[in-house]
Image 1: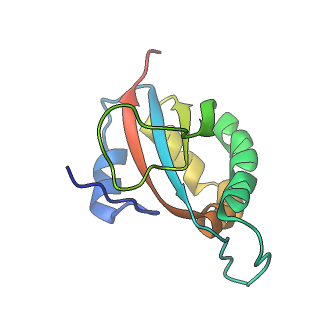
Image 2: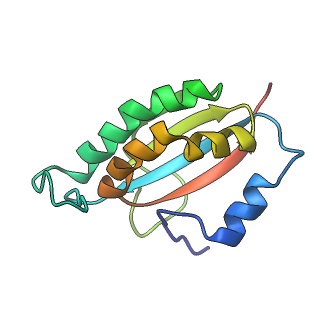
Length: 136
């Protein structure tokens, strides 16, 4: 199995993901890998860790999730691997519940979300997003 962390979905993947009209409530599993140092486009906070920049995003995204009927289920550090093998562990995992893919699309298109996304990009080296079907 090949694992490739990314920071943005490829257009064809996003199109297929968000056009899935049959998918109801979901939990997104976010496996997160942080940059050693945050990299803001305007050069601010050059000594800030990538984790701390991402935490700015994480604190603010709670309100964005709530605005579309979602919520954080869990967020915490990855502390070990018991089964399987990867070259490098992710730094953290976050689980977010959404009423469905369209709610996530609505969230990422909102001005409030777009205003905080700079922290996500500044701190994130890459991630995996895994959609799971959630009970209603």
